[in-house]
Amino acid sequence: MRHADLKVQAFLANLPLFSDFGEEDLERIAAGSSVLYVEKGRVVVQRGDPCVGFHAVVYGQVKLGFTSAQGAEKVVDIIGPRQTFGEALMFLERPYIVSATALADSMLIHVGKNAVFAEIEGDPGFARRMLAGLSRRLHGLVNDVEAYSLRSGAQRVIGYLLRENGDEPAGGNTLSVTLPTNKNIIASRLNLTPEHFSRILHELASAALIEVEGRNVRILDVERLRNYE
Image (cartoon, rainbow, N blue to C red; front, side):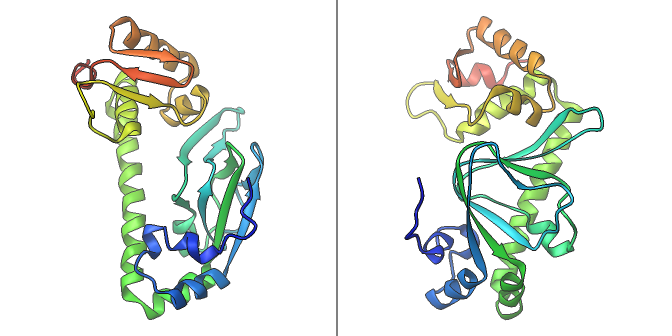
């Protein structure tokens, strides 16, 4: 699915970062932006590539990660629609420290740093929103370090399932969650081996807390799952 007639500024207007921008402001940002169509499995950026802007996902999904010297992949984050990546490195003017790979056919918008820097100089409110976005990303990374250091594998999986839904149960005490990508990638994101991740899902299913069918997970009792040790 390609949107050949999509106006870049129309998508930018839907990003929280640019929500307060007027039409002329968006046109300036759009003039410094480009649209990328990336097929599933293709690399968007390699670790070590120069960072000359940031990317926003229109549709699809991108994983951020790196490969160890032993060949093991570590997934740092999974970026979905209306999410962005690359802002921090853009400001540091450093190369990418992770690679970005499309998990599905994706459309991205690359916003050039020159356009961003020009807007920051003329709009303090935009600068504050950029800082807020970077602060949220840092907060998420700190939470990840806490989870890896202090929480068990089961607690990490439970937290992920509840966070992935993001909603309180609409009726009763059950929820349905669709995993956004395959289990191996999610396991790496949670700093677990695929085998450990599968064992935890089996354990939770045996405890009648969840039901798993492919990438669909039905949480049978949210409160019991939340308090599971």
